[in-house]
Image: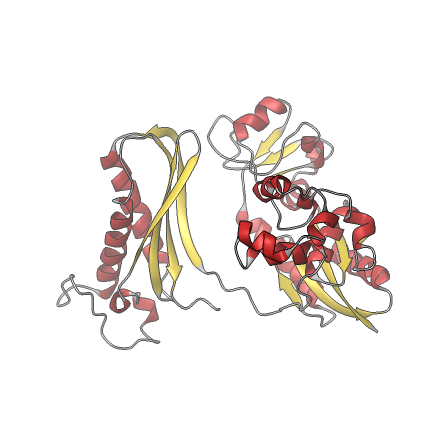
Length: 369
């Protein structure tokens, strides 16, 4: 039997879950995002196929979506519901004992051995539908890159195939951004070099691209052009590299004292939520109006990386260098340390510009390689 990589992608996932809960909305343009109020700041998490016909898409401001589709029904994001259904989807994919590499709520790679991958893919999609009453599309390839791209050929609720043998027949004359992982900026740089198709990218000199994109990225782009990619499906559970919180303000903040207070509030919240893994760095995110985003971070000294819940791995007393120890709970000392790091990161920004979003993120010290 031949080994294949399958990419399973739930169709309009968040919208589909909401339509299960609101069957009266089937056939209508539905948008899920923020708290469901398109007059507020927020972005589209997903749009039903009916809404997409009006030019509504993920990542778009809710207000823009409302302008493009005044008849859209807007719903609030319900992460708990999407997590619950996602768990059922992934459990179904694992039932055959195949390795499953989860990519998010709604997609995963599956490594299979079969002589009929299309029949296998259809059976897998049928299993998912039986377990969730939701449709998915499946891409088939020799590797992850091919399988991921192939999924788009099968949507909705179908099966797409893209292999090394058919790579250039299918993609050869298409622009480079037909390849997963290549975006608009890269396409523009490639065009300046006279590379406007996948076939031309595949034939490009790796050293020439290395001079333009760097010694790693340049040759990697040539490999992508040839349809080369990783074929091993890693079933190791996903370990987050960071954890954070952010807030979008309905009115821009201009007073730096208010901004500092919001950062302190977010820092305390994040510090309370990262109690089981050591934190190496605290990052602050500022989005200025209208939509320019900048981040700055502060590394924690090694002795200050350990929140209270991580003491099992680091049983010695927490040596917070500039916080009192006697009489002060460890949790309070950890929160104070985290907040100071957040404020130090904020100090790297230049005050004076209106701010529409703030965020604080903890980056973990024990991330896998």
